Length: 298
Image 1 (cartoon, rainbow, N blue to C red):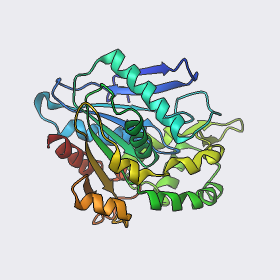
Image 2: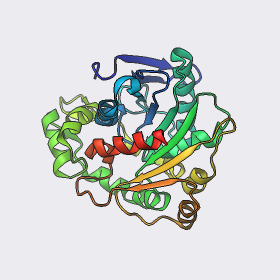
Image 3: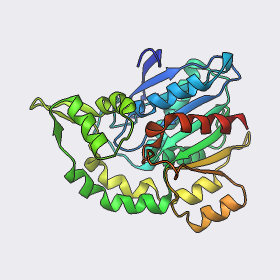
Image 4: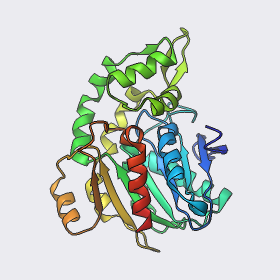
């Protein structure tokens, strides 16, 4: 992790007491893009490890992009847990993290916000609530989340959480479970991302860091109005390009379908790849990295 993300720091929000675990790989030049990434529910910043490496490997010369990622409240190395997890709370957290990051590093690079699943909803909410931000944000990329599908999946969330193992005997066992269930499909990425999801429990086994069931009272806020907000959100100081990246050809709702026909956002679907699941940025990181690079070049 340190080799890819040389700058690792804790950002403590005095308003909430939450201490955010952050990772930063600076860009090679002021003109290179900077990707600011937000993971989904139950995940961590290290879900973007393979994607970050591919983004940097694809670049040439001084065009090496920067990548910044962090663990959201109740996830990864961020503490303390046991707080509220509404979409408004999570967007407020991101606003603090973004302000703190910009104050510490003052990057002049063009910024692309990249959010996977719930992270995409958080970043959309953030842009909708803070349209006059000063961080040179030029792009918003939402990865594998469509409002109707996401809302339906929440209905199955409790069943999934009760069915999955509560603890693992080793990291290897946990990695194998993720690959065998096809939740993840890239062993290289799983070896980095899965250990970050677990912590040694009182009984000696490895248990989940993020308690998704504790977040259940907030689930209904996560994707409510996402399509409308994604289409409507804009910045006051510069134009904002938007892209929706999906792992399969999900049915877009009427608003998104019309918006795409009007050219209000770019749609990329990887439905021809059997190796791309919900965590497509982990499963096919090179293809997703190429898509992001091309998006920022435009």
